[in-house]
Image (cartoon, rainbow, N blue to C red; front, side, top):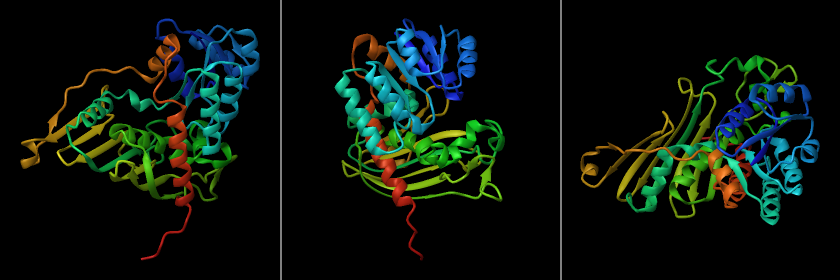
Length: 346
């Protein structure tokens, strides 16, 4: 597979390293509207050539596929251009910034007959995949309730750098720069994490989200800091299970943690992304009488990058695909709209 990487910012580094390590994948093009950035990226990662546009790369680089690693609002137009060129597409999350665009991307990808995938990276957590297998096998019975949270703290500590002076972070705080806030940045991950584990999509929801003051003027340079920082949702899934989902960038003390608790009528599961494989604990059978939990053994699973490359090699299907990206986008849109409504006073 000859792969072009569109966008050469921070996340593109992860894509380049991951794809370069896969047998049969050639990094054929670094593509960025800033040609200088594309050239520097190509030099650093051994990419064959740098281009200033996707059209230029399509005409010159004999590409099979692209990884789209650009700001959220550009996913739709770049994906549609890539699909029109007959390329397989691996797109960063969220798939789009509104459901209508995500659905258009899904329909176009399916009509084109190409492999299409969304980089929901936490599908690569072995603990999550094992949890899904246990749920499918009926090990915890019918799922009744769940609690899910994605906790980051980069707005309260500089573990990943100083957000006040780095465009890598500032654009994520600005709707004008294409951000859906914590909803689009990490809310989509925890929604996928939870619904995948239980094998059931969202049926209905309520939501609130909030923007906290981060500067005296509400701006830093060209960035208006108006994208949501924390969100809380209550969901009901199509199988009848209900639960709560929380995502925040103000979770002090948590660098980057996903945590899911799933409760069935025959047992419970606790899942995190901590460590190389994540962690998974289970309470079932006799353990339920005393509230005891045991660690579940885990084995590595393929990464999203590996699954995309394998789907292209075999002309198969990748999961999560654009259909899942569109389903999640519909939930994000609804949560965003509901979250802006004033709450009822007590």
